Length: 487
Ligand code: SF4
Image (cartoon, protein in one colour):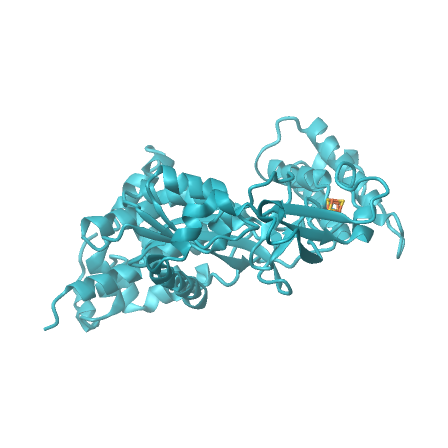
């Protein structure tokens, strides 16, 4: 870039401006290497394009405007232009380049490296010293509303039909037509389900080498047709955002969207982010969160988390790696008995969710305290729902008056952990856990994580990881300031 005399204007930006501090603390040049493989070497691009676009994405998450608004703001905001490394009179890229860079250049692979890059820079600067990580999850509402099964089916069919006709107009006459349904038609869902399956098969026969948006719509149609929980409104709930799921915040509050599973150091530096549908079990993400954190280069000798992470496999994993588990036990989560496939305990709501997506309606303890080993927690399901459930075979015994799911309470397997849980060290260390809740609140309150900006798990993941990157950089600035002696 040729420096113009207009850059004199940059002297107007205050020395303590947030963007000056950020520029000082983080080196963004790592992004060139991360995305270089996605650029065609014969396709000439300005050498600084990846860093310019990445800095624009950074500003967008930091200040939260839309793609178009971001470019408009950056055009006239002196501090933004300086941060982007442009002259005041330089033009900005088209807003469409932002989404292209986000989805195609960063995509699913490079975006993980972005988080690693910031944590590594923190380690190099001596900003991360603790060997403790704290884990938790938070949720983000989907960008679209949940739909009834008939709407899901009809929408998926219309979208598939439309995309095929748009790309291959000559095929329109060969595709089956959308059935006309009567008002309150009893078998409307079944008719539409049959139509979607037929449409999908026809498109696959007519276009065996389909790709791009047609493949994507066929994938969605297949997932919907094969979803046994669709008609019970427990599986796919949106044809527009089929990855979003129904989850529970408590026994009475639910949400439709995604969950972000997060690990961070005691210095509040996020080391791992996993995004799943809203219904997923927190404890199951434990191993991946730990592995992602270790891949950043940090050392881990202690993990602080809530009861959802106290499953016996997680405790065993920590033990095998010499990690101290500051994780309160929960008899339901760390059960010693056999688990029936597909049943999951939700610690926020304190109920068990069955493979059909129904949740238990009450809980009871069976067995006397004195008998110790034989005590069980029994979760009861609504048998009226079981009777019409598509998954009842093998789950509800014929003629059974109730459907229960029992978990044996086997305390002595966890004797060591129970003793540790009663120690002063445990009580003192578990007090550090709420700091991750403050981090979750920061992600939502200031950086748009309350609601997904885009649809689908792929894009939600990019949003979550880039947001974690921005929040980490903000934290770097704070930690650096704390390191400097007060003048
Ligand atoms: S039979 Fe009942 S408990 Fe079993 S999957 Fe169906 S609704 Fe759930």
